[in-house]
Amino acid sequence: MSVKYQSQKIAEYFYTFAVVLFLVQVLVGIIAALQFIWPSFFILNFNTIRTLHINALVVWLLSGLMGATYYVVPEESETELWSLPLAKLQFWATVVAITAVVLGYIWMGLNPQANSPIMGINPLNEGREYIEAPRWADALIVISVLLFLFINFMTMMKTKKWTGIQGTLVGGLLVLALMYLPGMFYSKSMVKDQFWWWWVIHLWVEGAWEVIAGALLAFMLMKVVGAKREVVEKWMYIEVGFVMFTGILGTGHHYYWIGTPSYWLWVGGIFSSLEPLPLLFMVWDAFRTTREARNVENKAGLYYTVAHAIFNFVGAGLWGIIHTLPQINKWTHGTQITTAHGHLAFYGAYVLLVMAMIYITLPAIRGVKSFDASRAFTSFWWMTISMVFIVLTITGAGMVQVYMERLMGLDYVAVKANYNLWFWVLRAIFGVGFLIGVGIFVIDFFRLGKGPAPAVSAAPERA
Image (tube, rainbow, N blue to C red):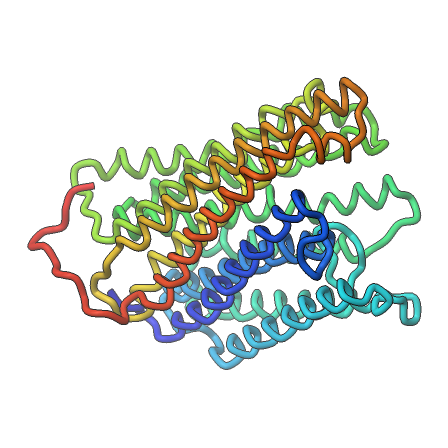
């Protein structure tokens, strides 16, 4: 395996940054889990650790998606990147900006007064949950994403060879960039502010990111099982159509109890849980149409690709349906059940997606003909089994929380400290299991293709 165009190797820069941040995200996640048991554990308080945990997740996934795009667009456009030096500049500017933001969070955690307003602007943290980056970082992020889009658009314009995958991928990234803008405006009305804030949070994750996932899944299925372009692109277009309804109107399940009109109850209830279905059908159809001539050389890539589609459906779909309907959501809203849904949805929909892209494209970037996939499989099972038990544990804690808080009337702290303590202990234990899986993956990432090549069988095995 090798890349068709040398500039595709820029993807490894972004993958490397993503992998490092992935490890950081899980490490601070373990600290956060321990702080549920011992609140004073660690020098930084829970709020700071939680901010680092969530923001690291978003940034490492975005970095991975950017790397994947820099790999896919030249191959689909059949040309080198329009400007490799500019792509490297965009990478290093992103790294510097993100590192500065992280250091700012830590500094503020150690010295809260450091975030005192300067000319009316908080310099280290804006305080808006999930998008805490300060205003100067917002501007740098927008510039970086615009530069990223410009490079890829100009690459497509070099040959003007349009494919559904490249168009859908860049279109999803364009929407992703646009949806960041509502998070840069404020309103004195809390209801209005929450309304626009959810555009950023929801339409990123369940709108733009799902479109990007559809394009990358189509590309991966062509690579690992030789699926026909017309088959995968058909389901990709259906996914885009679904997102237009379920992704956009599904935002309604965040509008249930924040003071918005009551029609959002049925709008959100109906449209918010159907998005992952086309991706599952895409995998099924790719396997159906390649049944007679399917040879799989990269089994690690196939493993993660199929797992991404399945866990996207289970985490984002099934674990969302169980508490999406307003009749249920009025009891479960904002409890640990929401946290359980978030963990499994992100793991299935995006963590496995980026890891699948890494295992499919990294061997070609490093010119590796074959590689030992044992660490990839070991890492997968450590992470997946641990994540399943983390989600079950948090779901159990959420059920207790709903009963004790919402029905019995106990306060949050009493339930957290007295009735859910063993759930926190189990979550921390399974969290360590997940960390072991991530550690194995990180080792595999840096060693892949750098040791002796394994023996190659005479003929590839049938999948």
